[in-house]
Image 1 (cartoon, helix red, strand yellow):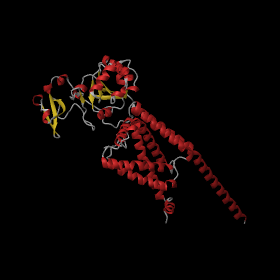
Image 2 (cartoon, helix red, strand yellow):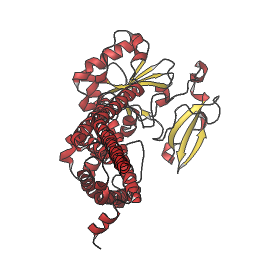
Image 3 (cartoon, helix red, strand yellow):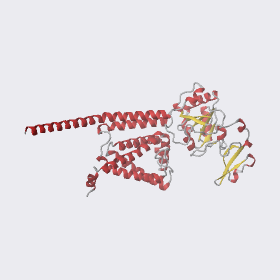
Image 4 (tube, helix red, strand yellow):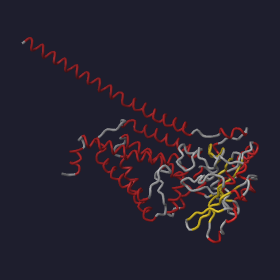
Length: 449
């Protein structure tokens, strides 16, 4: 029996139809989740694309990294919707197969070489090892191959005439999500520092900030951490490395700087000393200016930054600039932008995890992140009291987008399938009426006979 004959023999079996529905939901669901998590954080996806292009020696494509990130997110999301709803029953699995035939060898290469430690398939929402990603792609390939054989045996949710509208609505939804993620902040923050994260302890009394001898210092050597007082701090020339410090009167283990999954925050002064505790444990509120790519910030943003600094000064809000740039670049920025605020050094990857954007602002109250926004998404500050109210209501915005998207899909489904339902009910009733009429005629004939 040939493969085509075998497919024709089983495609109408109940188990085959149920398995087809399951494959649509599983394969489509993976693509939907992958596309959404990429689209919700285009900055993070762009950074990951940059890592890929660098590893592949394709540096000439780096300026297009963010465009590739958004395009890939839209493609995966729309492809997932098409597969899950049974739209474009043949072409959607073919496109998915073509995409997997590119990505699967790529993930195998990453698994063997380890040049990019995390594939970024699901953004920061779910981290998989490269080997796990490779085997996941193999399973997806099996599901797609099954759909190539049996997907056409089952009709889709929408009729062929309106499938393009489903794709257009899906494209508009993922683009709206990506718009907020790029120009403001991700509507879902999967990183270690979401709004509400406490970066510093709120229980800081005046006497706890008095003198150095009231602190316990933690140094590490050969992977082991030990505690020291100011009187017996070890010599760094002997291999000891400073980690952090906490107040001696604070309960054991209650460290000032929180240690999320990405590691502890380190803010360095011009001598390389970690001053994170001194910067972030100010009694007053703090506005952090994050500039991950200082040369690209540009003078066009300097006026707005200085305006925020002036407003922060009036409101008695601590204003601090953070960047991974070299000292020469920081000094040059201070000169050309006439910056009066302090600027410290922070690790590039850690800085990008705190907030997206170049530049971005993060507002802290008592050490807790209240909001974070890109500078371009904020209007000028007319009243210092406005600081606390500048946050982005991400949950509300995402809920509105989801409801609008689902409502549009539901309305389209009603318009597309109502006539089919009416037609079936009409013909069913007509067939029943015709059958009853024939039965009555037959009974009359029997009576006459």
